Length: 486
Ligand code: PHE
Image (cartoon, rainbow, N blue to C red; front, side):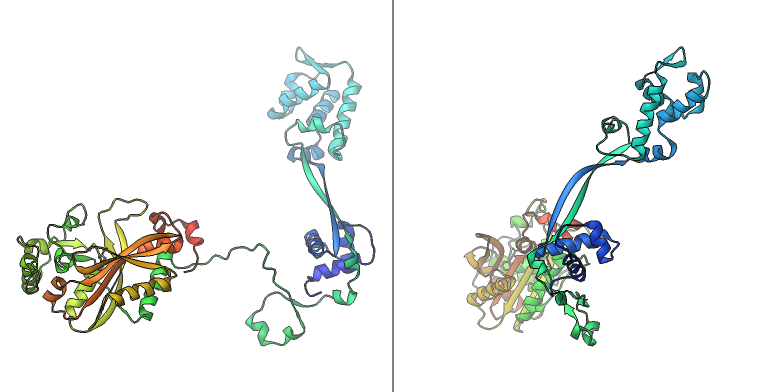
């Protein structure tokens, strides 16, 4: 009977000696236990195995409350007052007040009145003193040995903290034929191994021991330990997926110029997203100087398309606007600068970084969030490659259903929107495309560049099953503790 614990074995051996009901006391005695909890838990275990039948009955019982305990030692208040009145001649209210505690005198006299004692003109009198004495003696007897059967229960229930009514459970156990059938050889107590440790496995003692089977259906306490914030774990996971796919990570500052954040990406200078209400422009540094030849290239592209076949946006390009300091609004500013520094070397790079937009905070928007950005530059890079890369990424994240739809960004052609299926719905997670010549040409880039930028928090909402993005950053400890390990 490997599944029985040692206490269960001991108790079953005891119960095999007599085929009738056993009380808790009898079990404790024959098993040589002091602790009731051991007997009760062994009894439960045996009952679960069908080896004993347990009978449980509960009945009400009475025990003394805190005032009752002190009455058992010092006497009931009415008894003490009555004794005092009997012992001393002509006791008055004043005598009572000076010989008893303030909080006792009032209620005590109330009790005596209830027993038939009168007070007139400050003096005590009584028609039947013997009856009072007798009733008080009955109450005292009750306090000395309280019984739930006593008619005095109702009286004492009405008094504060004298008694408590409790429910007492009595259990008895009786062996079943199945329990009887177990041979006593199988009920020998043995060393049982409940936990396998490296130390145990190094020695020999486990060879003759029994392994206690795990009961995976039992309630267990949750182990609590420190762990990374779910956002941090998610970032780590994304990072390792891109590294595994052959990408290298780049990191850049979030203070940038409008030139790199927008002009380099052929975003027209009068584009609505550039307005103060969408972008955080900085007072410090208000301006960051850019290389004049770079500004000149962008000017040519924006005004008339430079050396590309584009006609540009027309109008007049402002170098002042270009040199404005801002908090980057997307991480495409990282990849474009990487390309500007490495225009001819094929590459696969990614960034997971923070971006800023003047958004009002709601269920799906934060003014500060993260993007997962990436590019592939190499001869022959194309749309198919871009889509496959994104699909592979989401597949590795656990979202096999991905689709792309046509979209528009000023810096890519064609442009795509990436959507992932989640709980039966398509959710937009980011944008992608192939950089336009207006973007690559001024930087001296010759090979095609696949580019994408996706929302990290959006993805986190899917992974963690959230419907409010704010949950990620409010430091709700209970929620954080219960997050799965990603
Ligand atoms: N920068 C775009 C955004 O913030 C995403 C994007 C990146 C689109 C690269 C195309 C290419 O939504």
